Length: 154
Image (tube, rainbow, N blue to C red):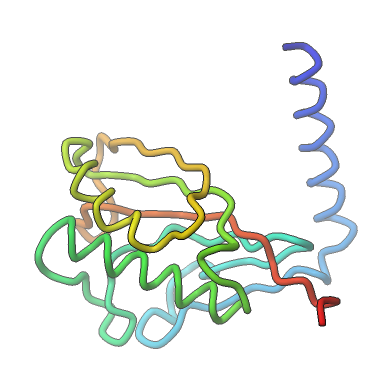
């Protein structure tokens, strides 16, 4: 375990150092449409990674949460993730890890039924229930880490 902790600490220090010394290589993607005024980047591309902010089941044209509960919200959330990745030149197959936040952990199976439809290759994932709810009264929020496209590929 000590070796793991040393490796993790070294990786964290390297990431902080790399961010500080290569800040000009960061690409911040603004949210689209009606969501453009949100106080965060939709995604940040750095080096070989795309860090996606948590996505909700919000229609990007209206900024409103889709109706119908966990199923439709999860579907819209995944479509939003897919669209963000496409704007970054990536696909769902580039997703490495997702974290799923649920307003009610009892809705895990219903969320999962929609979530799995979006992946040919299953990324690593964590899922947890929230005690205080999710922004806009959403049932789920999903954030992802993806591999950035290789600019050198032909």
